Length: 217
Length: 97
Image 1 (tube, rainbow over the protein chains, first blue to last red):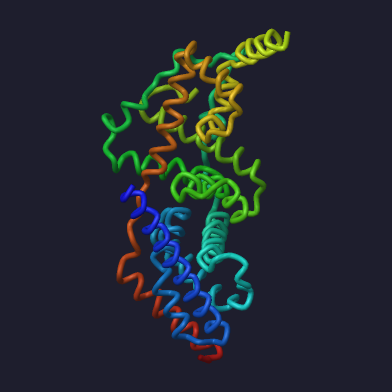
Image 2 (image 1 turned 180 degrees about the vertical axis):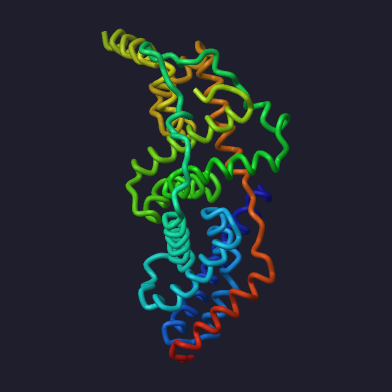
């Protein structure tokens, strides 16, 4: 009981602290609207680690992530007037970051890539898997590949997805956003988010299966 | 009569539950978004089909592996470079505050 009480006190304290941080940020952004460089610097200090991490996840390398960070904070300064406070400041900034990172990906020359359909499961007419048995490699992954190899494999596989699909996977499985939040961030319907997420996970699963020497189907 | 109909519908749902259907429903199943009848049919299929179990386990493992991705923080020298870049850029903007 005491533990539960402490839990609810902690939750209330954390909510209060989030509210205070949000109020402070709203005050800072109001000052940025008037051209206050110190307020801008304070926002930069608070948010650059998160903006960098989010950008890096999408573009996959330091150099482009750095360019995205620059773009995002310039946009923050130039478009501060458009922040109306309907959502939290961090949500607004997050949206700017993801969209800047996505445009960077879209500008990249498209790599020659294998058709992603080759990694999707296929089925017989009666609805059974085409290749049987389906191997359960879920307990083999860490035993057969080093953590760094797994990260590299997943990152490479993510880089081969269409930019929006990659963003959907990262926002869902790494950032833990809901389908609705992802839809709002990327301008997609919830059903489009779900469809892209499922297909991308199937492709990633297929790529992991192949890397372990099994059929992706 | 109603109980018989319910039983017939449940049997029919189980019969429709192929590997292909299970694959299409995995996402909703893992998110807890299937209704109780569909969940029961899905789980009945898992009890019968080892391929579906293997597919479900490897799908889940993939999601966990993606979720375990970790990224390094921005290197300190990059932070100071970006800050200098922004300060230089902002000089061209009107200053207030």
